[in-house]
Structure formats: structure tokens, C-alpha cells
Length: 118
Length: 161
Length: 95
Image (cartoon, rainbow over all chains, first blue to last red; front, side, top):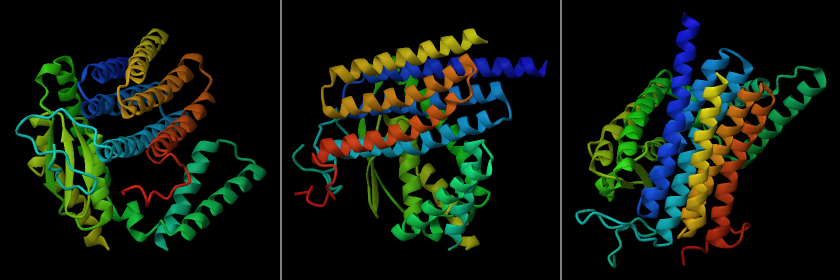
């Protein structure tokens, strides 16, 4: 009975992870500019990875395999924001123009000051 | 010094967890690699006492749990926006950074990037500039919810030191 | 069981395909790097899933190493694109 419940939860997590992966991918295609696409990539990097890895961990229970999987998850969650920030920062320094709402603050320049010529 | 000791223990545990082969020769290789990494990081002076995660005590797992819940909420919101891309209203948000230590600032910036919907564009001593997908995504930053949580996490490390 | 794993793998493959489309379309170099980054993290997940489908527990080490290499690769490519020189200290960049 308990085994059944764990299996069911694991399937649910795996499929949810897959669905969120596809949604993130769609976001990567549909969003209008580079900065918004980063958010789509963020979905696939966070919830998709979390769901799939925890679904797999539920499959194998307490074992060396689970420890390694959790290590993978920790590495992914620690490196993903760093890589995303490095990319966003490089794009700002390179003056890639974002699509913005009219009442938004302007894009900062390389030193973080709001640039005047946008 | 305590940070180096902790690093040694952490690396040894990591090596034992990943290796899975416990023969004398292989164990010796493991010891050698741990010593090499600790010596290199001591030489590079990248490890200080503020890098000791134990300083945060019990608050670190609680903070991670809170972050996990935030990530799930933010993901659902961004997923909804993905399916209706005409509803997005991207904007740049600037918030002051009140955390004292550099480690807390990094945690602040990284957590902001980790929750989908906000990406840290710029971070220095005084402020954090983020790109947000819409007003609701930026709300956690503007209202200071995230900043308060990081300050709470940081506060524990100061009181225990 | 295997069916669920295969379905999830298919979904991750679909994500990789979408990322590949973005990598080919661009338009800026950063769009391509983001797409390659997503492709890399999804590769890690696919390798982890294949570990469970085939039952070869050793494969998980491949995923572990790939997760680490992917990050370094992205940062390196970014630096190469930005500075055109991997040995640069980056100090002369902000001119």
C-alpha cells in the first residue's frame, strides 16, 4: 500500500517535471527578447530538475544512487543561477536592449547606473 | 582554520559518497585528492570562516525549504505566463541591499535568480538590479520578503559567532 | 514503471529539441548560449533517466560529471565570446 503510494507520487513527480520542462522550452521559443527567455530557461533549470530528480530518488529509496542524484540536484541548483547571472550580466554589458513596460526603470549600464540614452 | 577543517571533512564525505570502492590503494588516492584540494584552496585564500555553512546552523535547511516553496510558486506563475505570453510586462527593478556580509549578498542575488521570474542583472554593495517578468514576479523583491529572509539567515550567523 | 520513465525522457527530449531550435534561431549570441545551457542541464536529466531505464547504476557518474562540466563549459564559452581570449584577466574589458 505504502509502496503503491510512493510509486504513484514518483510517477506524478516525473511527469510533472517533464511537463514543466516542455513549458520552459516553449517559453524559450515564445518569449520576445533575451531577458524574458532567461525566465523560461529558469523554469527548466529549477522545477523540472527538482521534480525529475526527486521522482527518481523515490524510485531507488535510500541508496548510493539516491545520494548521487541529490548531489547532481545540488550542483545544478548552485550552478544554474550563477550561469544565468553571468549570461544576463554579459548581455547588459553588451547593451542588448530588453523589451520593457513603459513605467519600468531603464536598463542599467556596466557600472549599474541607469543608462540615459535608452 | 575551522573553515579548512570543515572543507576537509566535507570533501572526504563527498569522496566516500561518490567513490563507492573502498580498497586501500583507492582510499589513498582519495586522501591525496582531498589534501591537494585543501592545500590549493588554502593557497588561493578563497576559503574564510564565513564559508562555513555550519555557522548558519538550523536556519540553513529552513531557508532552503522556504526557497523551495518560493521556487514552486514562482514556477507555477511563470508557467502560466508562458502559456499566455501576451500577459507579460517585463520590467527592471532596483532594490537596496541591506545585508552586511558578502556571503549574504551572494545568497540574496542567487536566490533572486533561482526563483524564475526574476533574474539578477547587477549586484553591488548598495543595490540589486533585477529583470522581472511581470509585476507579480517582482513583488517578492519589491516588498522585501526575500531581503528579510536573507537578513534572518544572516542574523543567525552573527549571533552564533 | 518503464513507461513513465520513457514518457518523461520523451518530454525532456522535446525540451532539448525546443532549446535546439532557439540555439539555431538566435538572434543574439546570448540566446544561443542560454539554449545550449538548457540543452546541457537537460542532458544531465536524460542520462539520469536512462540510468533508471537500463538499470546500469554506474551511468549516474556520467550525469554527475556532466553537471559539473556543463557549468564550466558555459562560463568558458561566455568568456571566450566576451573577451575573445581565455587567458585574459578581464581587467581591460571595461574600456
